Every structure is written in C-alpha cells, then in structure tokens.
Image (tube, rainbow, N blue to C red; front, side, top):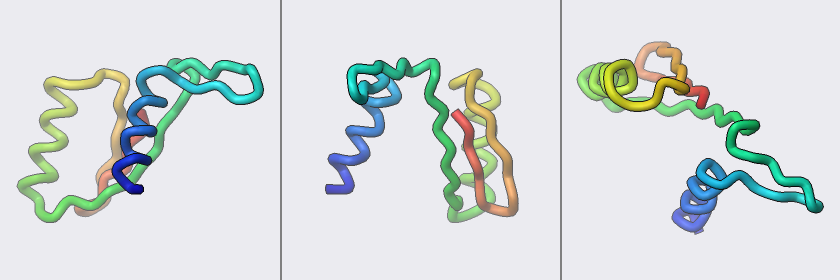
Length: 71
C-alpha cells in the first residue's frame, strides 16, 4: 500500500490532479515534507546535490540532521 501511495504522489507531482471537474495543475501545488538523515555525511551530500545539480524550485532548511523541504 505504501508503494502505491508513493507512486500516486509522484504522478500528482508530474500531472496534477482533478477534483469535481476542477483541474489543479502541478504549478499550483506545493509539497512540504521533513525527513531525518542518518548521519552528517549523507546530510551534506543531499544539500550539495540540491544546491548544485537538481531542482531550482526546491528550498530546504536544516535543523540538526532533519531536513524540511518545500517543493
């Protein structure tokens, strides 16, 4: 079930969704989530990859090993 929900979340981020005939495009959606890295090395690798390579529309805040992401 968890994997199905994860796939569903990815599809929403790609295509948006529709409720009662109203389509909500991806550009109008915001995703907030927090996770905890197991160690500082992985935390630093994540932050560097976001800063350097991937998405320019992703913002994150770090508190210890916890990362809060807004996308």
